[in-house]
Each structure stands twice: as structure tokens, then as C-alpha cells.
Image (cartoon, rainbow, N blue to C red; front, top):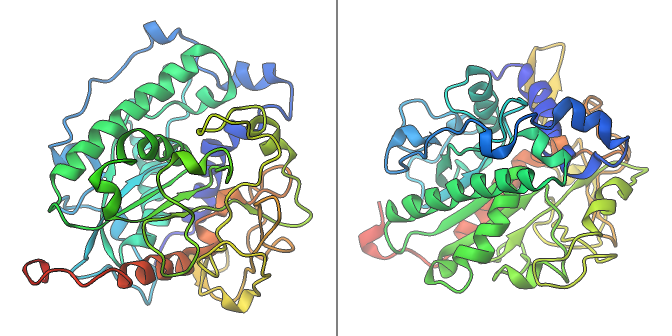
Length: 377
């Protein structure tokens, strides 16, 4: 059984990891900057040495690690015995300190947060894939509360690790092995950049089953054309992108859009007013259809009376709105804590649809051509 603190803690931590990027304008910036932004210049910020991604020690999850939190499953599920694909999963922000701009290694509290992310998010893909999640010098939580150049330097450093980890990941895979990309929060930001700078236009693009870029807005007009992959238009489409952001009703996306609309898209055009990509996780495709909760195969719900996080089917509906927000209807039972302003349920993006996300990955892998006889296990 999975400890009750799983959803409670992941709610807090994912909130911290992503909310900063969109909500620092809700309150006077000084308050947040004073409390959260690192207090040292980037040039003087302590930095850990680069990791050697050829070593298992440089990975939070990797098939040959003896303790792999990404292999967790709720009762009734199990990791694949012979996974066909490899999963490159980029974790959300775990470092909350102000003494440096990038995450140190070996901090027990930070490591515990990463373990929670692997169990609650990456685990959705262990039914089809071997999960590789690099340890990287993440930008500190406070880097998302300021427009100071040091914040971008911290994000660039974090991405440089993800990029090097990607090279090591690719080198470890057979040349024809299918790949799933997945991330959340800060991880999704880095995954977008990886797609644009390292994967688009290369032979590796043809190996991508799907890219699950959850919890970071992607403008359909201003970002998607720069990524090399289209949106997943059917539940069995491959070489495509799955993305959503969860809001209960009444939803107010103003905090998110305030920053998003003020920045240029990856394709070099303005994002202002453009819809964001919304894959309905209950359908596996973008759709204006309102899908009832009985299509939800299982949400991870904190169950206080049992002291566990329980997989509950039929709890949460989903409906892509015209602006690209994913509406989950009225606030769902069991998810009342740590909701962001505007009824933003981003902290539960994975938990709300855990079983459907797992089924989604399985359906896309099943739609791939049969592997060569030499690759069958």
C-alpha cells in the first residue's frame, strides 16, 4: 500500500514546482522574491560538478538500479515484465532552497521528493517501458519567481544536464527501440526545449511513440510548429504530443495567461490569445466532447480514513475548453487540498488521470509496427 503522504506531499511539491512560473504576479512580487528567490549571485552560487550519465548513480530511475521508485504501482497493476520501449522522464522541481540557484545532490529531503515524483508520475509508464529519469541540477524553485538573468542561467544549466543525459540515454538503447518522452512541471519545460533543439529534424524523431508534456502550456499556433511533432489526434496515434492542464469550475486561467501571453512562442510568433494544446486524457485526443466521470479508469485519491492513496475509478470527468484548459467539472471529492488560484488543479495533473494515462501509453505502444524478430523477447 502506498503511504497517504504520497498525494499530500506531491500536491505541495508539484504546486511549488510549477505554480511559481505562473502565479508570482498574483501578489506583490517583492513578497515572493524576498522569501523564495536565491539570495546569491549566480556566479557565486555553489554548483555541483557535472554528473557522468554513463553511471547508474547519475540517474534517479534506471532499469539497472536496485531501488527504482518508478516501478511502484497501486494494487491491481504491475510493471511490464518485458517492456518494449524506453521512457525518458524528466522530473519536476525538487529543490526549494535559497542558498543556490541549482539543486545540490545528496540532500535527503530533495531525494525524498524526487522519489515521490517517480512513484506518482513516472510510474504511469512502467506498464510499457523501462523508465530512465536523470538526476539533474534543477533550477531552484525561486528561479521561477523572478525575471533576473540569473534565473535563466539556472534554467539553462539545468537543461544542459538534461541534454547530456539524453545523449547517454540514447547511447544505451538499441538503435530501433521506440521511445516515450514524459515530464511534468520544470521537466516539461526542459522537454520542450529538448524536442526543439535536439530531436526535431533527426532520425530519432521517428522513434518517438509520444511526448507527454503535462502541465506546461503549449500554444497550438505559436509553439507546436517548432517541436517537430503534431498533437496526438487519435488514441492510437504515435509520433505526437499529449498535453493538458487541469482546472475545476469555475476556472480562472488569468494568472497563467498573464505571463504566457506576454512571451513569444517557440515558433517566433506571439502567444497572446492563442489556445493551448489540450489532450483529453479520457479520450486520448483533443476534443470539445464533455466526457463523463465513468470513463475515468482511476484517479489516485488521498484516503485519510485508510491512510493510503487509493485508485478510484469514476471520480473525475474531463472536457477541453475552447481556450485549451482541461475542465474537470466541479471540484472533485478528495482533491480539496493545495488547489492553485483560479481552481487550478495542476498539482493533481497526473493523479486525476493516472490509470487513463497508463492505458493511453499502452494503446500507443500497441499501435506500433511489430518489432523485428531479433528484438522480440
